[in-house]
Structures are given as structure tokens and as C-alpha cells.
Image 1 (cartoon, helix red, strand yellow):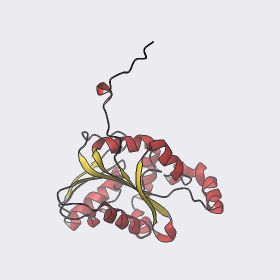
Image 2 (cartoon, one colour):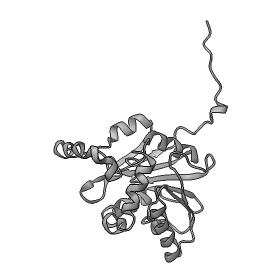
Image 3 (tube, rainbow, N blue to C red):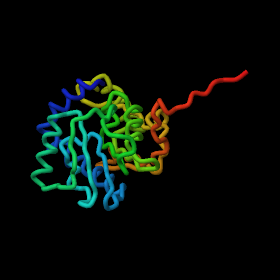
Image 4 (cartoon, rainbow, N blue to C red):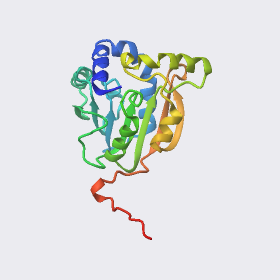
Length: 221
């Protein structure tokens, strides 16, 4: 998976994404926003906002920013914002989730819906989410992870070589994701039809420290 591959895949999906993936994944979107328990005045970042299917679900008294690598998907999110009069959506921007342009500790809560199995480097994604989230803020993910059912897991492994064409990794491992990112997990539970996806609620336990502020430690003899 690389940025150009992702852009190409979601350029194909853009015109029918809502029809195919809207109803199937909308319960997960609702569950994740309910889980976030947004408070008045909070600043929320949605990474991989896509066509903006989740935008009408946010409370009107929070300030939501959304980013996506796909201009085609984001143009539909912008149209949804204008059509539905979503004045609390303060920003929709084309941006690489692994190299965000936001300053440190800008957001109270950062959410990634169906993104972790799409980006080239999931660990880098989580690092960037931590950086732009306030210390001890909330990080939330919802994603399809590799099934623990042996038959389904085998099918996902067989589909893995088609990741570039699909635009995501069908065999994405939850255990590996949690191990490599070191997330402080508060809760994990299944969402969507047939519990096809999993929601992970975590606390921002590792505030980002710029390299220039890291004091080198020298060994003594």
C-alpha cells in the first residue's frame, strides 16, 4: 500500500461509496461517536473522513475537522456539509494522515474510521494521531481486522495479494496493530452487521515529543 495506490482506489470508490458502504458501516460510525461522548466546545479530528457519512452524526456544539487523502471523496464531504448546513464542521482538508499539518495537541479527541488497514504505515498513523491529540485525550478506531474464525481468516489471507486493488488490507491483524502501536486500550468491542468490524477506544498515553526536545542519554563507564 502507498499513497498513489490509495488515491486511485478511492477515486474508483467515490461515486458509489455511499451506496455500497454507507448502510453497512453506518452502525459503526454511530457507535463510535456515541462512545466519544463529545462535550460542548470540544475540537474533534476525524482522520479519513471520506464522503462525510459520519458528519451529520456529530453533536452541533462541537467543532469537527476532517481530513482525507482522496480529493474525490472529500469533495462529496464538502457537498454534504453545505447541503445539510453543518456549520460545526469547521474544516475539510486534503491531507496525508501520516504527515498531518496540524500543530501539536490541537484536538481533544481524534478518530479514525476504517482507516488503519488502508494507510501505508499504521504505526505512523497512530503516532500522528497522538501528536495532534491533547495529552490524555481520546483516540478511537473502528476497522475490519483479521477474523479469528479459521475459515474466514484463510479467505482474508488469500485476498491479501489484492490489497492494492481493494484499497485496504483484508488480513489486517488487531493483535499486531495493538502490539506495534502500544496503545493504552480502554475498551474493545464489535460493531456493524455480523460484528464485521471492531471498535478500539484508547487513551493518548504517549504525548508526542519533538526530536529537538529529546535529551540524549550517554552511557557512562
